[in-house]
Length: 104
Image 1 (cartoon, rainbow, N blue to C red):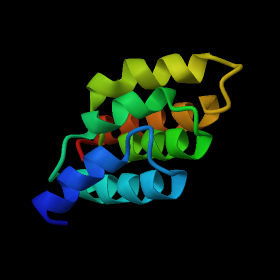
Image 2: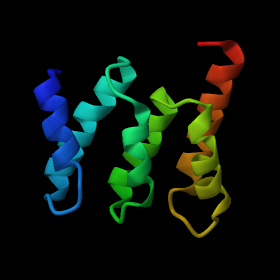
Image 3: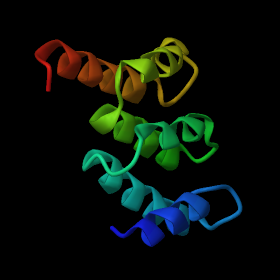
Image 4: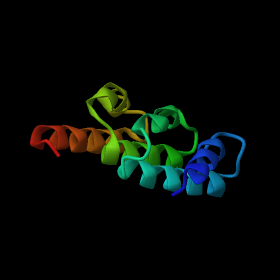
């Protein structure tokens, strides 16, 4: 994960690129965020993505590396029973809360 690779992934995760390219970019960003080399905030815009797989992957990335400040966004998704990502959002919000409680 070089800086150049992360920068390119930030571009390619956006709308306008084919879904497999966006998915690969999201995987690169997720690994970087998990290692602390990238802010988890880069996933917040993807919470409204039309592609359910990308949206759920962004939610999981936030669950892996996000802090308490992303909880309102995840809680809003979790509260929307019509949103197919609601269960994923609820599960990952709880993951963050558990991490914050245990100080990990």
